[in-house]
Structures are given as C-alpha cells and as structure tokens.
Length: 79
Image (tube, rainbow, N blue to C red; front, side, top):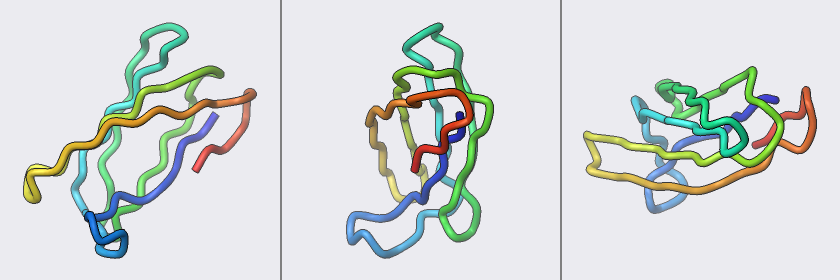
C-alpha cells in the first residue's frame, strides 16, 4: 500500500517542510522513512497490508506526533 499526506503546524494550515517520518508496520515490524517536501507533502509506497504506526518529527519547530493508520489491502492508498 501507499501512505501519503501533509505535515502541518498546529494551526492546520501552515506546511511543515523537512519533517522526518518513520512508519513502522505492526504486522512485521519493518520500518520505512520519508521526509516531507517544501509543501509538507510526503508519500511512501510499498507498505505491507495491516496497521502502521506513524511518527513525525520536525526539529525546527520542536514538534513530534505519533498516530496510527491501516493499510486495508495490497495497492491501497491511505491519506
């Protein structure tokens, strides 16, 4: 599956570029990484089906967030 989205500041509008993302598959514990672009966008492909833990860290803004998502089937795109 594919996970894509944007990293945003607390106001929900301001993009957070250069945010480091670590995605951990809770199915097999594999880890994947990405960095958001200038508009805060990121995309990670090749994720296994199942639940994933998403950790996003932006050092410049001293921001850190963790959340979870589910990749429901092979080839699914989760936003």
